[in-house]
Structure formats: C-alpha cells, structure tokens
Length: 292
Image (cartoon, rainbow, N blue to C red; front, side):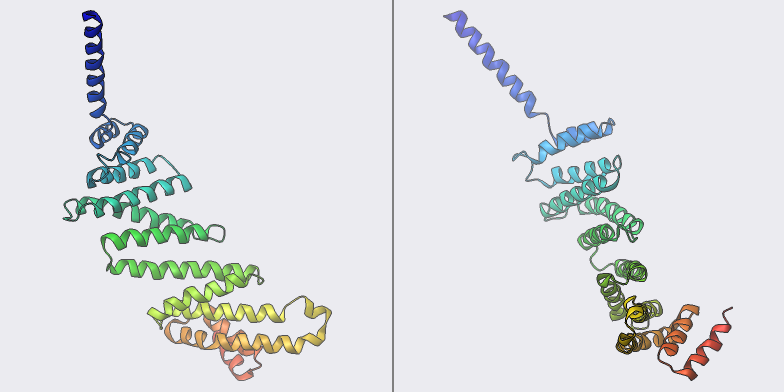
C-alpha cells in the first residue's frame, strides 16, 4: 500500500510540475520572443491563445502585443489576406487603448496604428480603378478609422479625403463614359464631386468633372441607338439632352473662372453648340484654337 501511495504522490507532483510549466507558456512575452527569433507564425499562434485566456485578456498589454505581432504578420502576406490581418491588428490595438484608461501605452499604440493607417491609405490608392474601386473605398475607410483613433483633428486627413474623393469621382466618370447605362456610376460621380464642393466651392476640378458628367449624359441621350430606328423620338431626346447640358453649364463656367483648361473650354464650346447658341459657340471655338 505504501508503494502505491508513493506512486500516487509522485504522479500528483509530476502533474503539478507540468501544470506549472504550462502556466508559464503562452504569454505575450513568449510570443514576442518567438517573433524576435524570426518565427512570426509561431508568435501568432501563441498570442491568439493569450487573447483567449481570461487570465490575460483583460490587460492592455496582451492586446497591444497582438496588434504589434499581427502588423508584422501582414508583411508576409499579400492582397485581401494581408488586409484582413491588418484590420485584426487595428482591432486589437483599439482594444488595448480601451483597456488602458490612463493611456500608459498610447504613444506606442499610436505608432503602430499610424503605420497601419499609411498602409491602408497607400493600398486604397493602388486599388482606385474601375475594377477594384469598391475595395479602395473599404481600405480608405480603415485609414480614416485609424486616424480618428489617434488624431481625430488631423488636417492632413481631411485633405487626403478630398483627394481620394476626386480620384474616385474620376473613376466613376470614366465608367459612365464607357457605359452610359451605368446610372449608378453617373450618380456616384456627381456625389463625390458635390461633397468636395461643399468644402471648397471654387475647386476647379470638381466643377469641371460634374459639368463633364452632365455633358456626357446629354450626349448619351442624343446618341441613343433607338433614335436611328425612330426619328420621331429625336425632338424629345434633344430636349432631355439640353436639360443635361444646362445642368452642366454652371459647373463648367465656375471651372472656367477658377482654373480653366482645354477640357473646360472644349466642354463649353460643345454645350453651346448643342444648345444652338451660335455666338457663344463661336467664342469658345475661337478660344479653343489657342490651345493647339
């Protein structure tokens, strides 16, 4: 019996030692050490266990380290996978700030969030084209979210947002030029540039692009294929087109006032030609010659 009792105590001691050893693993510090050793995936595995551990996940430290590790992990990834990892890093850092009311680590949190913000912004710019503009919008929204956390009154953010809207608007203008059935693109182009004008009514490019968009809509009406088959529709189509040309005029005239270029002058010439305003047509036709 004594022998069996001795074996039982030995097993209990072994189990206790094993439990104690396990208790010292899967810590944020261990995850960082593994990361520093070059094993990013291993660090991710460990930190994921940490944030699920009730004994650790109520401290800002573990969420800060998750944000740091995930930022590094994203560097080994590409495309949507990397983007999702950066989003998770940002989410972790927001949690770290929430659990740090005295802002003991806010400066370090902010450094990483700023790095993530720059990455979101750069990738949004790279995705601003007709095929992936929806992703660009999503990525840029994360840039704004990041900056709202660390520097909500940053003037650079507001300026960058205006630049993003201008670039996005040009994408929608281009889409509509290629496919005049894309009413969604027409409306989105107007929306993006209108938002710019609410901030800066003298913005020449925004005024120009809205004018161009309305002009394109007018020309698409008078060039509709069905008019070839039924000429009786022409008068109605011309009236509808003229309505769009008249909508375009005030914008192109403001663009002419605040920053005219060849495109603006050509747009005005074409609109006045479409409206049969012969004197104004001649005026801008003559001015257009100076750009050749």
